[in-house]
Image (cartoon, rainbow over all chains, first blue to last red; front, top):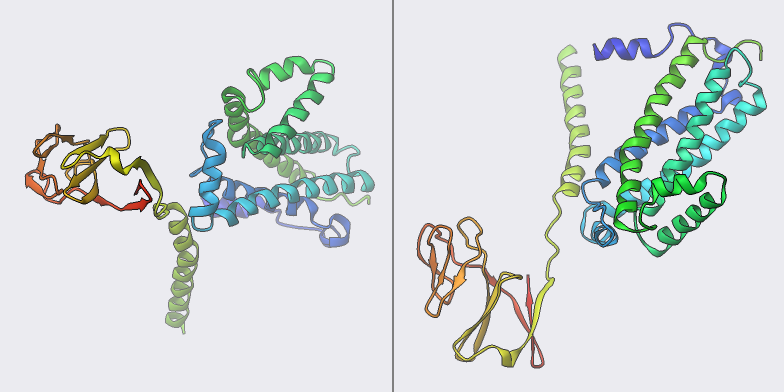
Length: 206
Length: 129
């Protein structure tokens, strides 16, 4: 069954022109690979991270000093998150420049744009989790920016019920970062790939 | 030919598993951070031929003559915190008893209480885990 799934994941026939690297630079594929890398390294980091205001930074110090490969994994996770943001941005830029957002692929553009926003939000929620000075103040700044936007005050109360770095807000950012947003991203990714497959990959009019 | 290829495949599979599995195991099973100070106290606080009990840290610091040593209060049977009495250390869970030096007197525990390292820093004592 797993083999069948993999067989059907890829189209039976692919146009040679669609495989030209210089057209897509494989940016979407690279972004998804980076996402998988983030999921795996993040899953391992879960074994050591403590989502409490007092314990978070200590757990990271412990991970970096006393756990085999802990520092490497954490750096991998952070570096991949930077890479993912850059790759997703470049992918979006490519789609805009090649006009791939035009009908009949407009729905996939909407899904893709939602994915871009979710990626930024995922990176933002992850930024607070180490609970060092940089994380705290950067997140506080972000929340002030949000509060200045119309309707932002409501969102802010939802995200940060106590204050940035308080026990409740940290737990909410944690839940969003490890469960809700990744779930949404992976679901939308599958939808994204399904639509590419259904619309027979890169369309021949380009 | 067929057999040779299978063997090679199995070898490569085992190798791949080992390359992924061993570091993963080492990541998930960290060594206990060695040599952390559990507690600090003044040397003069330990009464002659007496004991100081730190229930929170689960450590007793005992003095016998000039000798000062620390015992972990975790019972070697199932890990309950043992009670220090004037003559011996008794576990409230299953009745194991230990001498003041730490060795087991009555079961079910058979191993002696763990001795903790005590470092002297001037008139201060540091008990290490």
